Image (cartoon, rainbow, N blue to C red; front, side, top):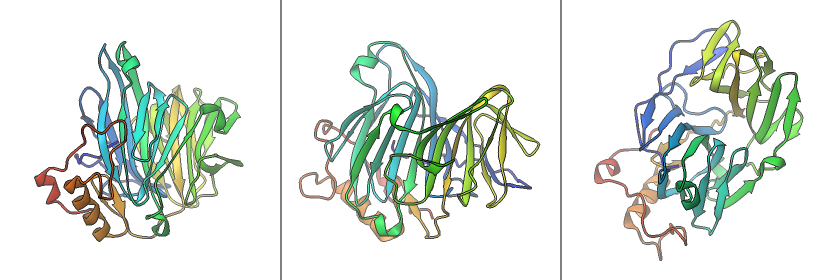
Length: 318
């Protein structure tokens, strides 16, 4: 998904094991709300995660859906995971892939890739829903210029951890003795966790950075209650367990090794170098699809998201 700047999430004061509490602000991007938890004023990243959006929940009537036109990325990997609905992904390396709930799309941008995400024509013909999470993972500095790549993994390929009242699907990385099949370039964990009312779930203890995002229901951590639409980032080393409220809960747990190298973010570009972001900006604005570093998806090349002159004058944040 393309990043259009918006108001920053709120970060109330915290204490105890909780290092940062993030309250994303919702914005309407054309028929459905997006809530952005990362980056936030007090926390740019959790492990390698530098961008975290909740999409929906939304319901579209006939002929409704999303149309994210072709747009570029550098220096990151995009992770798409849905609870409801579907996306049709196309990219400049020739991928054309549908994604459905419980599956994962992992696109490594590396030195540069272009992609689009749209609701399929078949789904547009009927009432449809959309609910999911899209994240970006910053690549390590020595991997920022690798060739772009794409992986899709079906629901059945992702490890599932179960316990009393707990079902957790490991989307990325390693945790709880399991390893996801998705190719990672840094230490990472990312899981979809469903809790029955009153059930508890511990965060893994083998990762330095750890966070929880509540998508449905509520949880209690160390005596404090957190409703849906909150991200909590915890201090390294503390034993953390989340207990579901009376309606149960659905969580995304995420983290990994702290990325110590500085990262800059501007529009859809992430890099350790401001110069690389400036080069990518100029290349996209030049729109030289034949000879430039960016090409449009072969079967979705009639339009693209432009950079406005006003936005082009802004500078990367880091």
